[in-house]
Length: 291
Image 1 (cartoon, rainbow, N blue to C red):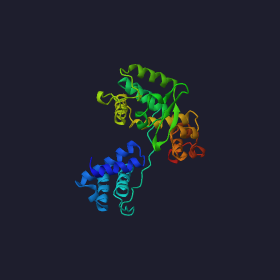
Image 2 (image 1 turned 120 degrees about the vertical axis):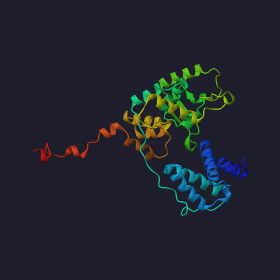
Image 3 (image 1 turned 30 degrees about the vertical axis):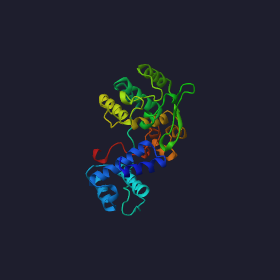
Image 4 (image 1 turned 90 degrees about the vertical axis):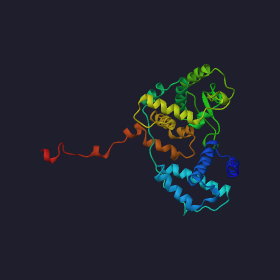
């Protein structure tokens, strides 16, 4: 580990950043350094501007991903190197706001049924039944499954916040089957790594991503599906079933209700409850040229 990497890691850990954020930030600074083949402490605003343009033009990153890279560089220069950072010289790109892809319940069933092997099926069922982020799913512990209260405890979710989510009876049955399938019963992690050398570690987020993408290909779904899609489906389908936004906000672990309110734009029930203004117009049955 280089001296600069160690310094940045310590600054991130001192501020209690999430492990996924730490990995993302350190990787972003490493890629920035590799792009110029130079130590990052010898690079400045001119290099950052050039790199930002390259992320858009060469690597075809989205504005949100580029902003994440800039956030990592900003942390490195301000917190690690104790240097000034000019927003004027290195502005954040305007973020794109897209509505997420939503699967129907029939499509979710196709996705889960297409999952192979059985572990992948369990992972996808857990994502959809709880609305967890994949990093939260990866770090679930055996002790987090509370069958007495029928809840799953999420510890240290995004923003270091704990919360409880639903434990569906069907999911509980599936988790019991998962437990019986495990040859070596884990003492901590509900989904331990399948690699023998790392069996005392949790499954990786990347493994969950590949499980979802593999099932989506097998199910031949015409939509771009990834683990977070099931979180969006969880929220949207709850809303369509009559759950209120405040409850969904708590289940998702959102800090702001406005973040949860976007699912109103995705709910079929809310869309169908609103009539188009065209339907209130009194129009002739045919256009003039057909008279």
